[in-house]
Amino acid sequence: MAAPDSAFESEYIRRILAGEKRLFHDLIRPCERAIYLMLFSLLKNQADAEDAAQETVIKVYTNLRLFRGDARFRTWVLSIARNEGLGRLRKLSARREESLDSGLEEASGDFTPAILTSWREIPVAALEQKELGEILRRAIEGLPEIYRNIVVLRDIEELDIRETAAVLGISEAAVKVRLHRARAMLQKELAPRLKAFAPKRKGLFGGRA
Amino acid sequence: MRIDCKHVWQYLSAYIERDLDPELREEIDRHLETCEICSAVLDSTRNVVILIADDRVFELPRGYSERLHERLARALEMDA
Image (tube, rainbow over all chains, first blue to last red):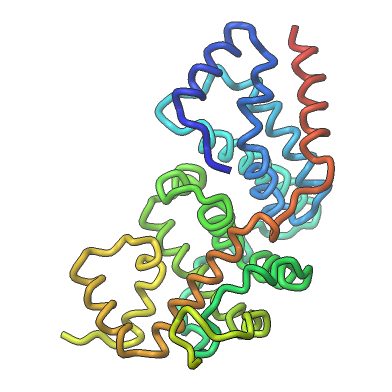
């Protein structure tokens, strides 16, 4: 969903803080999908992600006074969601005596893409099949955390590079590097498998008639 | 200078983002015109990006929004 403009946001925030509390429902609505996906990508569990999303929204409300207009509202909301998710992960990992840092380190080395020449068209129509969605979800869920976050924010929720950097508290340069690596990993994993879903007819890209 | 395939792959994400300076972009375009492999890698990367952006890939749990707003309504009421 396209983010509402910041004039809408600041007007709503002003009115909510002045007592029109119910308007908060409308203010948060455009963010609720992104909040859930952000939390699901961290917690990897529907029930936990939903619970954390509710908690996030209430935190956003109680802290609304602290929102500074210099960031986008959505960016601010998503960083609260992320903190909520990380807090829960920390509790879980303390219980499991596992290091949160595992899987967090930057991958290095070569990102050689999957080489294929026959899959060119976008099998969007094939998304009607549950199987394709499953393959895509599993590939994203299989990415190391630092890459998964970037993909969720930039490619799934379509935040821009600057917003993505602000939510994650990293530089724009780091976002670009991680985005590149994440996409390369996804291409490598997915391209050979998605070939099977490509439309049969030749077209668009000058395929043989 | 002619750039090679490995060089092109480094810039694919920036190419998709349209975040390259014009000279480099032009150079990559020239490479893509003649390199079947790189243009297929570019297409498939772009396709992956388009596919994962589709709302059907990640669906919200049924009733998620309703439950969220119910909980929120209760919290707003308590904040009298």
